[in-house]
Image (cartoon, rainbow, N blue to C red; front, side, top):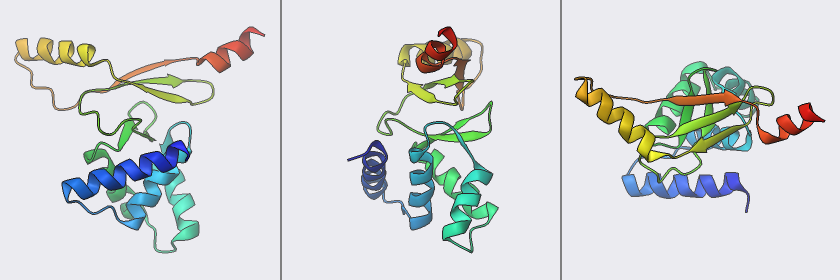
Length: 149
């Protein structure tokens, strides 16, 4: 079973447990994102979807993305305005993303202590954190190996 298939099965189960609809369009958007190793932009998703669903329009894609984000199945890469599948949707805490600036590979980390420390610091300052995005950009191991060769 591929990683994308595993994520789709987890998503289906999670949506069923929460009593929310995992429609064919939402499923396909998640599948397209999961099959891509890096971030995928909404209009790239639309291009791929429109070949399969003639009625696919920007609102269709954005509504599916909004749903997938709300359910914790997809993360938005703020710096690229792109989307990546969540590696472990059952994880309810914050996350950090390692983004390769050369090949676009994205890896998700779950260093809860960092998220908790930032939230606590913000709270001491009287600030209520509603969303937290931590993106670390650089070169992945494969791209570093190629550039060192």
